[in-house]
Every structure is written in C-alpha cells, then in structure tokens.
Figure 1: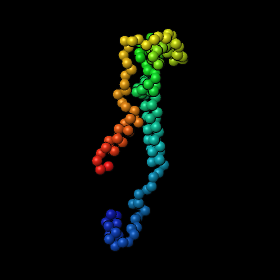
Figure 2: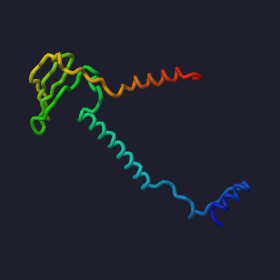
Figure 3: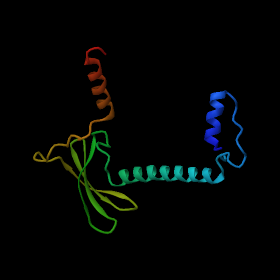
Figure 4: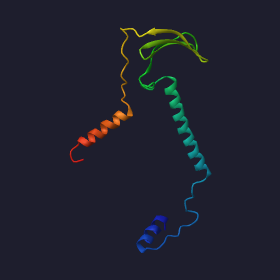
Length: 141
C-alpha cells in the first residue's frame, strides 16, 4: 500500500500514521541554509546597488528638498564636469572632479530661465493623504 493511502485510512479510523524512516522527508539541511543565505545576500546587494545607482546619477526626484537643483552640466574630461547649480535664486558654476568641487563663478538667476520643474512623482506623504481623503469620502466607510 502506498503512504497516502495509509494516511487516508488512518484519517478515517482516527489512528496515527507511522511512516517508514526511508520515506520520511528530511528536514532542511546545510545546503538549504546556504541557498537561502546566498539569495538574501543577492537581494541586499541589489538594494544597495540600486540606491548607489540612484544617488550616483541623480535620479531621485526633488532630492534637495526644493532648495537645490542642478540646472545644467557638461563633461569637460574623463571625470571632470562643469555644473550649474541653482540655490535660492542664484546660480553657482562649479568645477567637479573626482577629488574636489570648486566654485568657479556666481551668477544671479536670469529672468528668462525656465522655472524649477515640478516633480512628476508626488511625495509619499501627498499620495498617502490622497488615499486617506478618498477613503473618507467613500459612502459607507
């Protein structure tokens, strides 16, 4: 008789099933632990790599809290850039290398300069407030 059939009969008769030692499934071993640990390290590594990528290439929307934004930038060498940064109505022309950042010039913000872009993705707090407001307005809630 197969094991599942014996279990079915035991359930009907309310008797415990005694499985053979050879057919009993083994518990998790060292190999399973190693695979789990490796998968965890890979996921954590991807999170760290993604955060570094976002920070390195300035992909975070409104990262300066709205008071600081990069207006323009150009590569002038392998690792050297000239960047224009807007800070509270004035523009700073910065020389950026892998070793330092130097202030090259300060300019007033031109009148014909485009306004600071509004981030396409609203902040988490704004999204949460919208969801709560919709749920409160829903009848029967």
